[in-house]
Image 1 (cartoon, rainbow, N blue to C red):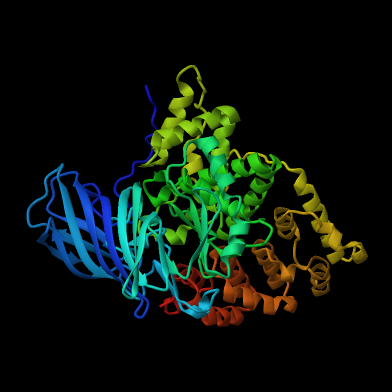
Image 2: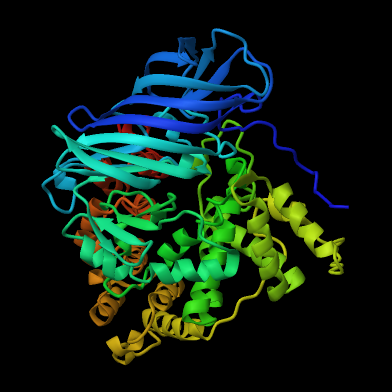
Length: 618
């Protein structure tokens, strides 16, 4: 008999108003006009919905939307808008002309427009693009921002297919998280149609509009970006097809037809976003040497872990990110050597320990599966679902062995493909798989609950070892001795890091303890040229070190970096360090740049540095 853990039950969704237990969206048809003059998306959405139980209402999520009219099966329907919440937006309750009967299929059409303050969208003037000649638009719906772009059931348990018709100014091009079918000029507009035949959660709905060109990498991979960037992006992301093939060998066929990437302007708040058929990528990944393409590998891995198999609620977000970190590191090890897996895992564990120390190990957000009742999922976002989640997956692997776990993971993906599941579903499958058909693994002493629901560092951490770590630690020790007046400055030279990977350099910077005297930082930069590094991971860690030690030699570089980059992985720790040392400077730089950042980034930075809500991006 299959065993299923039952210590926690999921009822509804703490992040959604939608009555998903009574009716559910199965398909969306979007008809949008993108208006750059007033920063609005205008048009309609038709929702094909399945009625699960008898009901007299349909409840959808929304935020800052203007609803013009609603029809149900072609007949006008009454609707009300509930009380507004800063976190969850506004529920829209629709009252069909006739009661809904279980098993029925209905069509709900809503005409509406978005607000210029739509939290899912970033409207960029030409000056904030690379080409400086055309405006730009991109979306970021994860976690719960799709409701500001379209009235929907904004819950990851609701997976729907969609099609779309999008009209944009004729000099621009629209792309979506779907397969592009047709593009034609109609008067002053370029009209494109799209289809996404695989059901997705609302957080994966995505659109980008700009002056975009395409470079093909393979029969199913293309790179899109502005003309002045696209060739660099195509060069740096040229290994994408290798990543897709490696994932297919580990977890099964790629089911999304195309894997395109669009390299966005610098204000994009993430390193990458795994929108199906069209990954969004930050230009901070462009280094000229492909040294940061592990992020692209991560987004490719999401095509299976996170997109094909999804969590039912944001409380199980680690099922997206922990499994994806695991698959990413397996692929990178497969392609570039086993050493990569352990070394990257060590750096990930470093970042987890730093977060735990800063947040406090008893903080509820340090739980692998935090309780999000009344909580904005953005507020709980951290390294925890990535690295604590990764360590949990490694722990599961250690219980059964690598070869057996790889076979299970393949079966797990194929069993739950195109479904939204819970931790209980995943662990139930895992335990059943390894306790039947002669496998007979004994899990009686395993405390899964502690991993999932206890705060702080996880129990049963796996030990990772890497020779690459030795060189980084040795160099860090040499500089600590120099800083203490016990080492020889003359022994330092550019040759120290010649041939190093960016991971090794990041490891070194993570392990150089402060305080470091100003003259030591000056000497370090003289040899290693960190201030002019093209690698954003290296530059960010270096700038954090400079801020902590109050070295003025970094200030111009820091201001320029915070002006051109809106990726939260970088700007949040930099502003946090500035707050500790020069609060007024942190506020001044943020006020100067906050309108350049995506609204999610601006909101989180404002919280990080303790500013009132008036400083949120408006």
